[in-house]
Image (cartoon, rainbow, N blue to C red; front, side, top):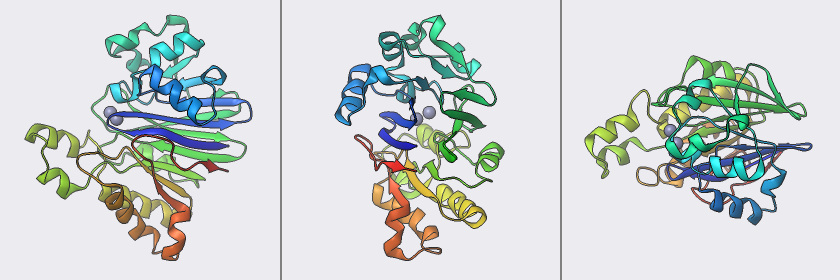
Length: 262
Ligand SMILES: [Zn+2]
Ligand SMILES: [Zn+2]
């Protein structure tokens, strides 16, 4: 299995997970043209994708989905309520390509599981992908750690992509209006660096090391250095400081992240 992100921030989210002949695009939050370019730039052909998986209906996750699905005939998977509430542009995903998530869904070489996240979307989910004996969790856009997330993280993973959205001080002192600050830091907003680090600590204590990628960083209320430092603090309790970089990375807002190969 290999995995990387192509974009990860409030301006757009997209990742690719591949195993055998199966290639799954996770979220399609850039325009279709940018997504095609981003895929080709890393040697992937949009026409070789198997399906698109959506985590929720916000525009930074669905922006290019309709055009991409239509152009390449790609099935798009989302929760049933997500389909009912997608923004206008996305309703154009043809009916025959709209698929509902179901438990123990198999897509080619992948088996998929889901966990509820806590976010101001109708039915948001985190994803757990299994293939070739490997297990990867992709969890962003959640204001708190849910029971479903703990269940997903209670078993060992090979890779964990976890939101580390904002630094609390930067958010509270930053330029966002009060209402937006409350939304971001609320139970249905986004995970702070501190919350992500606490969850990582919980996971590492229970299951030992796995590769960790911090994702969906705010470009206004966070820096890659702050997010990394918060997570490195818990990681460095378990590995030497110079080894931390082998386990921990930050998904860039734009462009390809490190590539995980399991
Ligand atoms: Zn988002
Ligand atoms: Zn969102």
